[in-house]
Image (tube, rainbow, N blue to C red; front, top):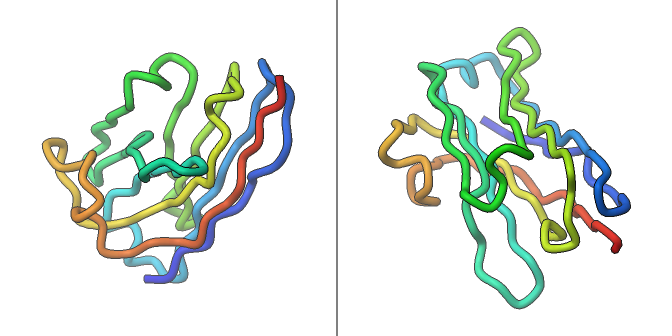
Length: 123
């Protein structure tokens, strides 16, 4: 499965962006999807995930502001980001794998990764 992330850009604080992660084939529907981010000089961190069964998980820092969803017909997982803050600025990466609720926060759970998409939030 090849993943293509898109939707990043420059936005003012308080604004919104929607990231997309589109897979190359329909087997994507058999996997869960997740988003991680890496800011300059920091380690990659978990942001949000959605298991194949529909369970979601979010980092505490984005709860209530970000929403992960998927459209299996389009082989795509989305990350709707609202009320963006400058500290949300990072390169965002999408991943896919046979994740379960207890493992969504671990990068090792994801077998496939897309390239990053840059999100910059200005103050």
